[in-house]
Length: 107
Image (cartoon, rainbow, N blue to C red):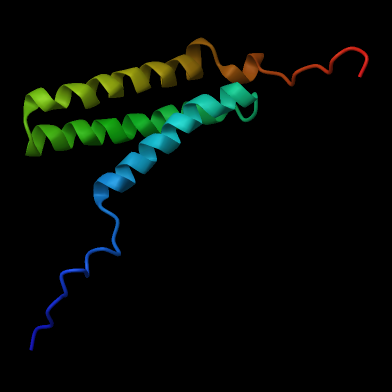
């Protein structure tokens, strides 16, 4: 005999969009905080790469299941993430120019 699920049985699971939004928020934090705090600057590169992978997946999903006109935003976001990743990897690596802030004179 098959078991029936109650109408509230799906409430304990988070929707996939919530998980994707969480990844995007963590990626944005990973882009900003390492530079702002001057700690672990290589995390900016990895955050950009992670967001790039997610945006390529979002573009592919949108092209397959929705409409091509709706795929413009994730495609532009993927290009911007690729630009940041390449810039932090080859053009101006943060690790080479970031150093601890010197102490104030007289302290």
